[in-house]
Image (cartoon, rainbow, N blue to C red; front, side):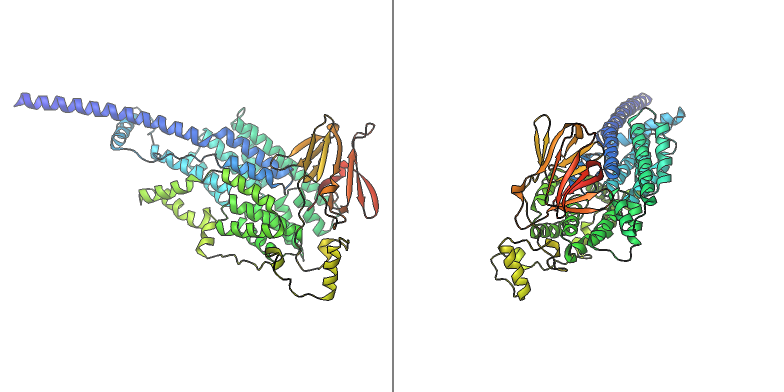
Amino acid sequence: MQRGGAIVFIVGVLLLFFLSAQAIVSVKLLELRVQISRDRLLNYELSSRVLKNRFKQLILENNDDFHQEISRNVLESSIMNRADPRALELNPVEQFGLLVVNAVRLLSLKPFLQLAEDQETLILLRYAFYMERNRRYDVALEKYKELSDRMGASRSDAMGFVMLHQGYCHAIMGQNEEALDLLIEVRDTFAGSHYAETAIVLINLLEEAERRQEEIEEQALTPREKARALFRANQYVAALRAFNELDERNDMDRYMRARSMEETGSITEARDEYVDIVKNGTDREAVRLANRRLLIIGHFYGGGEELTEFAEQQAESIGDDAAVAEIQAAAEKQEDALIVEEIREAAARTGEETALLNDLGSELVTEIELDEPLQRGNLRIPQPAIPAALTAPNAPPAPFDTERRSTIEALGDRKQIGDPQELHPGTPTPAYLYPAGRLVLNLSDGRTFRGREVIFTNAGMQLGTGSIPVQAPYAVIQRLAIDRATFPARVAHPLVIELKDNRILRGSGLELRAIPEAALPEVHIQTAEGVQKIPATQINRITIP
């Protein structure tokens, strides 16, 4: 009897030893799997480079160039966006092994392995980044702060990521002192890493932004000129304050104010303002720009199907089909946000066991996607009535008065009557359609590029050719001109020239030629008053709406 009991005891010990060994190996494999999954998911270095380029574009580059924005969104959609179906799942053997390993670590005075807690941190990190990417900066900042408190004095890659992006969110929201404190800490703590490199770039950009804002504040400008100058300098927080102080705002002021709200995180308020501009605005250019923002919000920032469909219909009615096609093509390339479904599924699976997942799951309903309240009908966007002439070319025209009839007949005879935007004040006019390639840029090596707008800097110019702009220093530019064959005869002065002193000129022709004896070229612009010669460095950009 005693012998049988001893055999059972020995078999039990061997079985326990075998199970413990297998469980420990399973835990080590699980720990390795989690680490590999974390590295694959987070890709910290890529996120740092994208953050640096995003902030550089926000501070220094043209704020109406949506081509780079949508390309960056496609790239950002791949960061922290990979499925890991086993992220929060431990089988019974792994759970037993975790108990054994932690018991041994307790005896050796080492900290416990907390794999479930680590996975919660990973989900919270991805959630915060998703919120930041979708311009809910206040929510992202709150989650980054929570992550920072969780990690304590850790100096891991995750902590560097959190501090860097926390500083970025502070900067976007105009909290420059808090941003600089965090970025300087990142620079000093993670010296020599890509975190420090990105932090240095962001610090320099913030200081440059403050300098540019001070220069504008010192100029003798009217309140409207000051607000627009701050907007064109990409100082969105200051621009928003300036626009809010204006007694009256026209459509372009309203667009710039809405864009400032969007860039500083008030995306819902910005969306509502864009919709109102598109529905009721009379400035054709402001309507076009506002509708493009609605297209981008709908496709990239959680605007939802209803908003997207509304914006696409409006784009068709104003002749902005090219923008729709480009944005749709880019949207098809972006990856779906897997973190949304992962949080919902994990919260439903864990029930009351994990408070964090339950909180995030409920927060998704009100914060993470704009399209949900739209689809539920809580904030429906009324479809404005489209004039029959825009949607049904074959329908009989509505009755109109004699003066308007003479105007239409004159247009039919290709007689110039005046600026198209001034024909009927208060009445939206359809945008003219121009073929692509109205501006022609010739380089000294014989290459030729065609584009839709040109942006001037102190060092050179950038020609908007589509998704990838062409940048060229003045030294290699041989000629910049327009292709008159692409201009409709009914428009006398289609060129819009924005100067850096905030003046706007209208022209019918331009030419820039290299001047060997001059350090910088001049642009010859044909206006109603004659040819004006303007140094290239005094021009902000030239476009044809």
